[in-house]
Length: 464
Image (cartoon, rainbow, N blue to C red; front, side):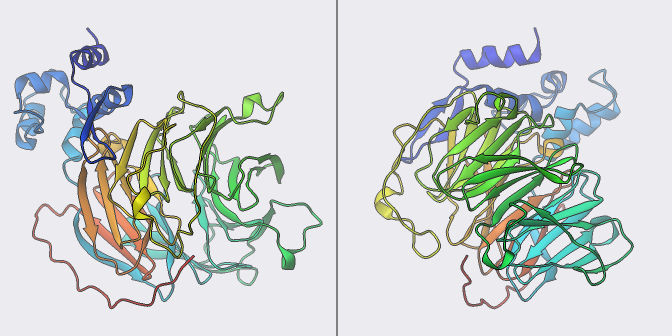
């Protein structure tokens, strides 16, 4: 019997997915993603038979290493799920150590695909690229061009040769990361080519929309962007022109991404409280969403794909992360207005549920106020995407278990909102960036006694 079929049979006997529901109790959800997560992060069945653990406790690391060295499983090595089971218990919760501190709010922080580079974008026209393998030295110090308010997003190309950055304008700029120039001042020491996401007659001094989210496709040939004019744009980098504009939502499109490596599917999240799925193969006959995902009560600040063209997560201003299966789609919803930049979330709706909620699971505990807080799946290589993690406006980073819904860690250090954070694709290292201008690195050090550095003095709130 196949391993996946055995898991499905176990589920049929009642081994479902337990989640914390929005009334504070527990519910049982039987869904395929719980089985996929187990397959990716549980040890190989021979390992489990050799060293049965009590309940849900992980197999001892020492026993797993001994079994590998003695070839007890007959494989002579760890399987990918063995590696994830081994590494996923070592959460990056120790520290942090401060990588850098700037005088302005940090809006973006992200590792490159291979983890060798780290990008941080700041409010005052600054982007820094750090070389992780060389002790976090600054490899490129970029001064952005034509900035309006802040850097809203950055994205590294898959080959790490180019970086694009966006602001509250319809122009995305592209920088050559591979050049030998360390200081990159726009159109002074290097050319930051502007990619027009508007008509050629556009007047920059009277801009009509800004770009909140921009991402490279997996092959590096296209960019997808979400904007304040309720639209999604796709830019062809080889042809140097827009290839697609979709009037996608009824409010700001705060987040977009390609669903998988094919580039056919695009996910979007908007202030209209909807996630939408767009299939570009269908646009020949109609420019409509392939699916609408209803469940959030307020606007969506970020979406992240699991990379399989099927599952995604979204962070919402209703103070919740939701997990979605795009095979569950429908038409629409909503209520009252409030401004998350200035107000706390109304208590009378904090535990309210959307009666048309199509999400698989909801994760609560963090706070989504004042800025577009981002959330992510944990890395596939080291954790089997077993966790979801997010920044928070209460200055912390939260880590949740995908299957149980439990909060497994809370990282406290920053004094102002943590808008973005990113987990190294291979190592137990997580970097958080806050509006206090601090970039902090969290690691698993092998002990539980790492002292926290002295917290910086709090500064006046900045709102966006």
